[in-house]
Length: 228
Image 1: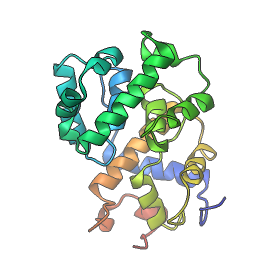
Image 2: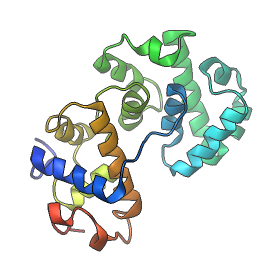
Image 3: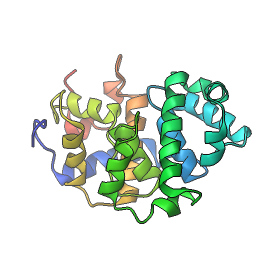
Image 4: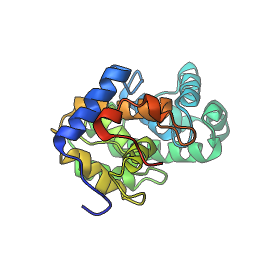
């Protein structure tokens, strides 16, 4: 497969999952009280730490605007103030408004999960990607975590640990990395959910961009020492 150095076997991916689970435990990810809140979080988490997103979402919740039409009624300046903790707030305010406008135009006043339920996953993904500011990772996060679709989310953490262990080329495409998981593992929403969350835990705690803690990595016995 283009972009892959040596595609790991299904058994290797299962062992990676099991090693991460043994080290970090169940992640219960993605935090959010409603599917819409998770979608909003997926937009706000672009290029920032999750703790910053939690503060921004808490502001929106306290203001009583975590509903599509309520959020659209906000003035741009107030929306920007509420999501300021998430960083890049001017850009994210525009992206969030564009996404919510698409959502309201698509389903009206229907509850998001109900309104999008009848749309096939490939079509819904294409529609999400057509919204300005919604990339593959954001779209797939919405599909998996908010809507329960069987898609694997690829992020910088995923790319980093795979590249360091020589399983992908540094320039591997999003689609090639995603296919690595989706074609080798059972198409299971709980599995995809937990696996991605565990990779995030690995990246945040050990497989960091600088000063990685490789000696503590639970994948040493599965993949050997990485090449940094």
